[in-house]
Length: 73
Image 1 (tube, rainbow, N blue to C red):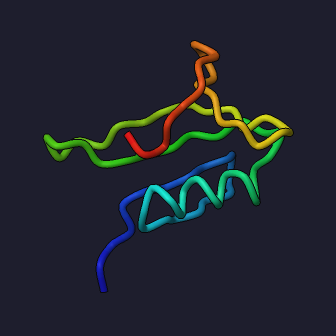
Image 2 (cartoon, rainbow, N blue to C red):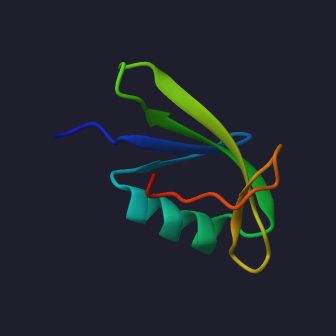
């Protein structure tokens, strides 16, 4: 079985996702109104970590820059 590409973490809660679409749906469904970290692989093989805020409206923004995040890029 293939290892999941993405890991969403909020304190002790961990959710693994296999695609960017699954990440987006999971964030909006399970993490509205919270802050999370998203671990994703990069082309170099080193994992990239993003800190995200999921607003109550379902919008996903970068916690530090407050810019809307496009999960697909």
